[in-house]
Length: 134
Image 1 (tube, rainbow, N blue to C red):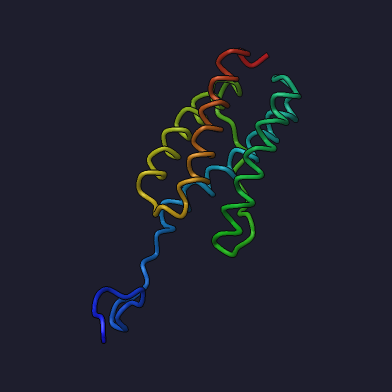
Image 2: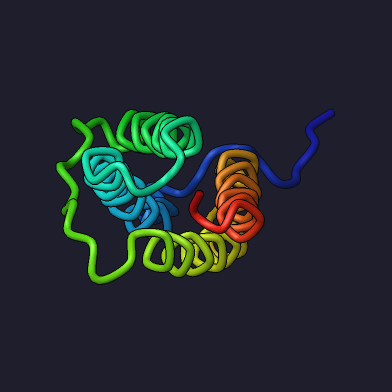
């Protein structure tokens, strides 16, 4: 007796779907935040423990995203415009929104890491807000 139905194989004419595009901006953001937090640490205007914690989180995210792409972590831009605390707070808030949007746009295989990054960036913004940069 033969059965017919769906199979797990794809037809040869169907190219694989690349669902990584929403991840690249997150990698660029994370590497940029590492560089900006290095600049903030050098300036010494923010709490060193907070800066180090934020930096370590972004470095870990950048490393994992770069691993997914099979590349080295790109070098970020460390320039800070104006008050470091205000700039970092603004960027973390934007970064949390960016990660949440990427979580929805990317394939399900990336949902966990993107959800973690979104939550982490949101927590970063909250920490900066509460600490007031000090």
